[in-house]
Length: 190
Image (cartoon, rainbow, N blue to C red; front, side, top):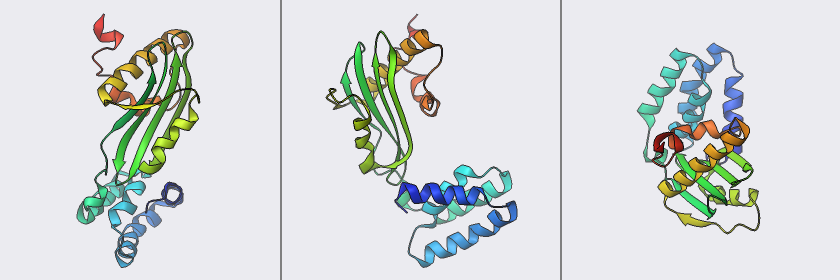
């Protein structure tokens, strides 16, 4: 299952089911996936992401543990593309989820305005991730950069944005753990 739209659709359809229907679906998904030669874990992980019942979530986690494979491991480490600098720049941060699925944070900023463009893609494939650059200003030239440098640059831009606007753009919270420990953040440097 490598199409983000199919994964989203499956998770939404699953979330709309009644409690007992969701419970009964787990073994059926495992059996059907195995019959099709698909790793059941690849199908179960998106369901776990929308499951609110603790008992069923544990059943999903157990089924994932029993059927997991190398296909759940991310196929590429976190990586980043950066353009410009702290005065005017942009960054695309690609965070691996499982298999070829990633989540992407794409930002552009200026020192005077804060974040001018913010795009979060919560579930795309690796091959689609670099296309997120197209959502940012066309005159920026992005290059691969070490992730810690990108995180420091984004953190500085987010602090600047928060000082100007009081709140951060929607979706940034998904990446909050990456920015809270940045050594150059104003909160830690004084």
